[in-house]
Image 1: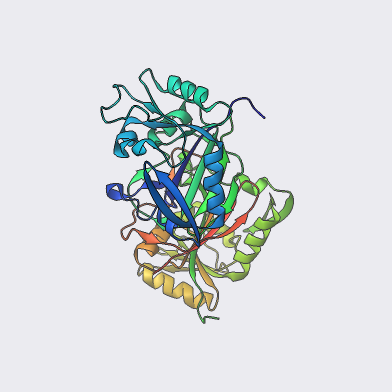
Image 2: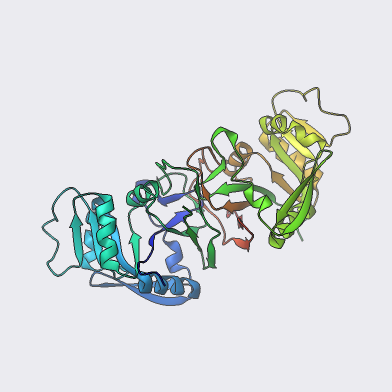
Length: 201
Length: 201
């Protein structure tokens, strides 16, 4: 086993490539999390969120929780989610890529690091925190920057059966295309197809 | 079994949504057709094209050939492929949606119909030709128009593990989004994931 983990990213994406719908609507993108027959609870901050997903999706979540040692987020996502209330569903510490100091509402015991000297430094610090586990990129803009910088090892897509027509695309601003990926690992859930691609270098 | 078949469409698409690369490059999109371990020949006009694909992809091609009763193409694609030399690989007759009469180079015995009174008429005529079999839309612009007109029953995607960054997107100009699809049938080839979605109405 490698001493350091992979740099990975994962998003729910519509068949037409959107990871947020018009007006930042996630209704369709996250519908699969209530479409299965198996109860599964994730923790966001102090709050428990009950899901109904396929057994294959439970396995996917459990795997993400077990293998992720640190998350990297942009400032915008971190503020939008209010720092996941101090506890991201994946349960790993968060590294925030930012130009400014931590917001005042961040509580002292929250496992979060604010990195102000750039993307590569943030990834390096996340790798140190993650140890042998993986670093998972939570923000699309950061994932794009990592792809362009050759820092991304793996892309996980929860492909959902909707055409949203508009919104935010995961794959934009690629400066080094074409990028070759490996054959995906495929796992079929209910209302979702889980696809995991390695990024070839 | 229904008396009339489905209206379906199918494309090789990169993970970032492109069905043609920059400068109409198809090198990456069609790479899976030479990536497998099983010999398979398709006929384009008088020419035999030898492929090397996975057994799952052979099954997909055979199924398309057996179930497709007519193809619908736009004028541009029809001219670009020189009418597939009179024989499309799927072996079905072609209906061309156009505003002009047939080009002079079309040979008399080629199974092709030029429809000048609009999309719906072309689909209707293709359905008559197809009988109990399916009508398959070969052009992305026509597929988009069919989606917008509520005429499309099924979308088949050969999802390939590349990020092309630029080119022609399959899903654009959608006027009736969001569109809900069914859970896909998934078949895993070599260098390709075959996904077949029904369009919910």
